[in-house]
Amino acid sequence: MIPPAAVSFPYFQQIRARLSTQKPRTPPAATAQEPPRPPRWTSPHGSGTLAPVDAPEISDLLVDYDPDTLARLPVRRSAVVERLRAAGRPGAARLAARLPARDDLLDEAAVDALLLRVHAELQRLSEEFDQGARVRFVLAPLLDALRAAGAPRPLRVVDVGCGLGYVVRWLAARGALGADVELVGCDYNRALIEAARAAASDERLPCRFHVANAFTLREPATVFLSTGVVHHFRGDALVSFFREQARAGALAFIHFDIKPSHLSPLGAWIFHQARMREPLSRHDGVLSALRAHAGDALLAAARAGAEGLSCALFDGHVGPFPVLRIMHAVIGLRPDLRAPFAEQLGPRAGRRLGAFT
Picture (cartoon, rainbow, N blue to C red):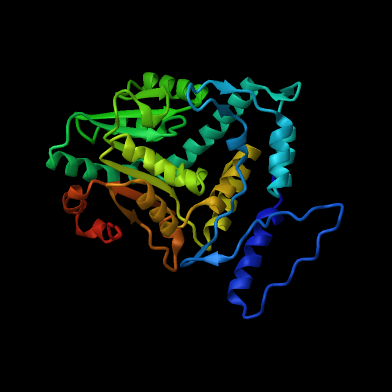
């Protein structure tokens, strides 16, 4: 368990600094024996948000793949521990140091079992926050706009980094998108994909899952979507994430992620302490809120990478009560789809959509 001070104290320290007219206290100089740690929090920016933290999540470091073949590569436990310590995450380093390993190489079966448990908890979170309905609310009007524009059939919706495939399976179970829609989930992790396939088979759902790079599928996507993925990409990698989708020939994308605000880190800590059993889930869940990109940063990366597509933010306004809408989505689509999409979305939901550029 991560002690409350590990998250709550820096959080309130940052809020006090924003509300006070006095300058924040200068931290004491580091001793020669202990090099200075990167700050968990950086200065505020944007409206009601804080600058994202760049420390890695534990789960991002436990597996590695060849970028061309997707073959799994061995991971040294000591390298993971050192990376987390260097990022100023001593609690995360202690968690990683306890993972099973042989000759310093992480036990892949144990790592997969852990990730399956963590993703099962993520699925419960998606269920409790009704993420499937949130995706459908935006995706269904977009598909109608594609039909109105005469887009080729089938309309193939590909979930990038699908994990256990909860959103894909939720959409398939409701069957409300139309018979001309194909639902596909992609992830690099074979254990997660096999679990997603087994669940879809047990539920007799019309959807498919692949161990694959979603952007290089033989049958290209019409629409890419994801949930909680984009905050894993930083800097140039975030721009490349959007560029690959445009190169793949997609007509649109919808990527949901945590909406950063002055309340999101505290809310994430309370929720994960109360609802998550796995220490890794608690750590990475809170860090996800700290790493989340502000809307303007997402839009800048999408516009820089997705050439030829118009981009906008859905539910991007933070407002005084950010707990009412805890996620936002960056949307990209072909320019000729902007008017049909707005029409299908309707005036009431349209007020939640920012301007396309």
